[in-house]
Length: 215
Image 1 (tube, one colour):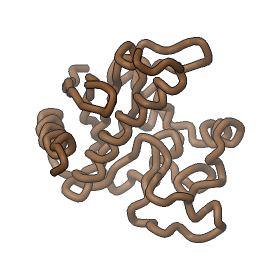
Image 2: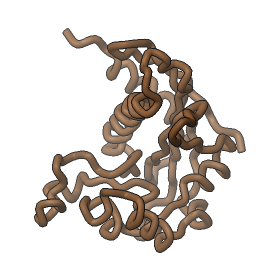
Image 3: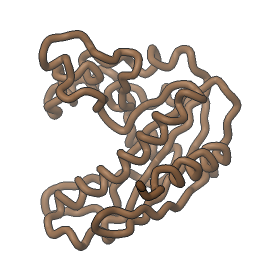
């Protein structure tokens, strides 16, 4: 499968960081082979502090099939950056955290911007619109229309999805084992005709705005 890869340089307070975004446009139905909602709900129950603490997370998150039933096309974005660029940070865990902040802020910001034009989006992680999430206070969601879900929360095996769509496996951080790169995965849902080239052009326009110095 031929995908399109975009190389982007972004400036932080400490360094200029290079990251990559791979784009893949597919039918929503192609994801069905990677869904196991029961399994991933159980993994969240035993391994994630957000379980039952956020409206965007299990057990409240919808299944992928329910969430996408009105959409035909899924544009998957796979963003990653090499960890060798973060040598200025001494602690490996903080390196991963810094890299993920860079990726998530840019990719989620991009999808939030273009989703109003194309449809809806699947975020890089749990919804972060409200802090704390009203779920923790046993209150209804404050922004139910804008709330976002991740692939994992909706029962998608992102590891196998990435293996099929991109042939560049996810790598995981563990203690004393800093991976070669770290990555985030998210998606755009649409019923409009769209190509990888359209997404690339949209992202380039977004980065010009995102990286524009504040006056």
